[in-house]
Structure formats: C-alpha cells, structure tokens
Image 1 (cartoon, one colour):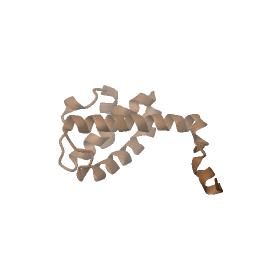
Image 2: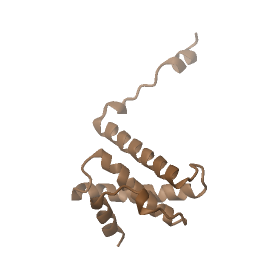
Image 3: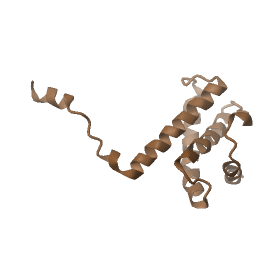
Image 4: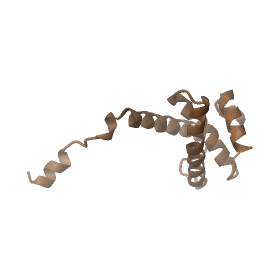
Length: 121
C-alpha cells in the first residue's frame, strides 16, 4: 500500500469538534436545518425551488443579526431557541419572494415574535 492510499484510509480528525463553542454552533445549525426542512415540508415547497437560494441567504443574514442581540436581551436562552428564531427569519425572507407563510405554521413563541417585530420596525 503506497502513502496516498494510507492517507485516504486515515479517518478525518476533527480538531475543532472538541471545542464546546463549536459543538454548540453545530447543534444550532442542525436545529436551524430541521426547522427549515419542516417549514418547507408544511408549505409543500421543494428544497430545490429556485426562490429558496435568495430566501435562505436573506434568512441567514437576518438570523445572524438577530441572534447576538436576542442573546444579550435574554430573548434567546438556549440552543433550542435557534429553531423558532430561524423559522421566523425564513418566513420573512420567503414573503419577500412571494411565498406567504401562515402564522399557524410558525412556532408560537411570543418573546421571539415581539423581538422580531421590534427589529423590523
């Protein structure tokens, strides 16, 4: 077995994976992805819909602005709060491309809803 074959067989070592902050962010992104998949499923929108690229970018941009502010204000207290915050962010982004999301499809977290209204007004 030559050197390149040995290198291909070596397991990938995730040096960052032991960092608690990296682990936390991975969990947050996983929760955001699950929330997105569930919302798209409930809206009956294909994950390959052309409108989603722009909407996802807008939602992530808004989420990245909202997340630290929500943490400082005590609106977000756990990783699980990422999902409702992202769902509402994605909903706003989808509405900008003509997809209306019924309030019944979104998580009913009054703190997050009020916070997001304050951010957008």
